[in-house]
Image (cartoon, rainbow, N blue to C red; front, side, top):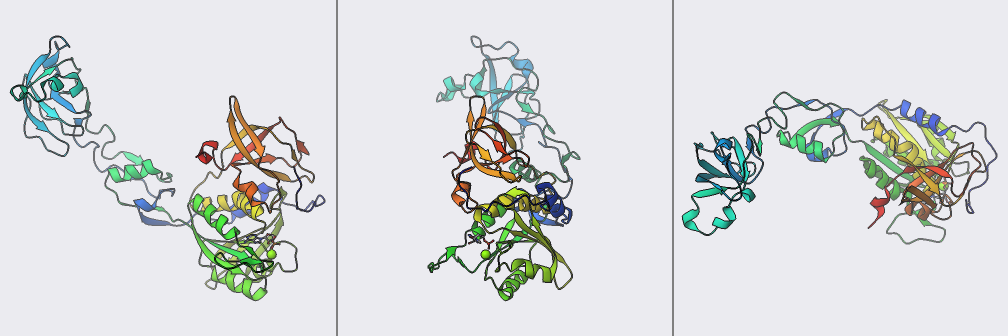
Length: 434
Ligand code: AMP
Ligand code: MG
């Protein structure tokens, strides 16, 4: 790894593994309650009820093509050279209820989705008739030449083909994607029970932080964590609630943390390391049961987790991320994303993991799990992963160029160029192409 601004810590036996830390966090969370939502607001949520079809779909047989509804027996001799002539007795468009029925040697012009008239048992697509040749010739429009034979039921979508009344069409705990939301609309359901979308509070802490829109005074930096974390929260499908910036005083940190308790999880950044001004942990200890952990990972070693008590006795989980912008994002990825997904009723928190050929070495000098920011691209026979430059936890651009986190295990001192490395994909290579 290239030069880093992080200090080299000696091996610390009390460090928690990534898995243990995650297990402790997930173990203290329960999925949110169910709530009725307009289906347009349910994308990415978990369905909280079983959905049964109230009717057959389609309700009656309809046409799969624009063409002519016929009796297949009438066109059993038809071919390109000797068309079978049928007299056209009407036309049915989608949405119309046909009043005509077909008798021998007759046809009805029909549109896709229109109800099949009585007597018809097949549809001939208009490309397989001589309709185009007849166009414009008024004398010939009350008959049609059929150029092909058809089988019984051809191009007819039978009633109940999609589903039948009483079918279980969406099971409870289904993830609602665009297709599922379409299925709900198909049965006319505009509201469903879903696991409530969580609201996640974000609090930045630090005397040096300036709000966007303010001039930077000497020594100040803009608060970027609030924005990267808020966006990461949206990516998971939850609602970010920005609390603002707390100064590094006990009073201000306490005031801001208490104002953020009307959320499902409160995420803070910075103020959890061992500096003199790191107030978050003092406030947390006063208002709840809080653990401070060193996690055997790089970046993002310091993390705080615990439950804050509200006045009504309710407990709100608090995850205190480290302050460095890359550490905050990697810790969000490892701990907050699964935590939020659990509140959302999800049970699988895994990102896709691929194996890639490493194009730059990754060094691991203190037996932590290294999450190196890499850009993964496809090759002829798989994937390759390149470091996105210097890997300091303050260098947010290393994250912005990355689509994955390459993982060097705790017990591996170095992964050399050419080694196969596991990469947790945050985006697919194609997703970052313009
Ligand atoms: P701390 O954990 O408070 O020691 O902060 C570690 C580093 O992260 C310091 O360099 C901070 O200036 C930086 N930092 C803390 N909070 C933010 C933030 N919201 N946006 C950008 N950088 C931050
Ligand atoms: Mg600070």
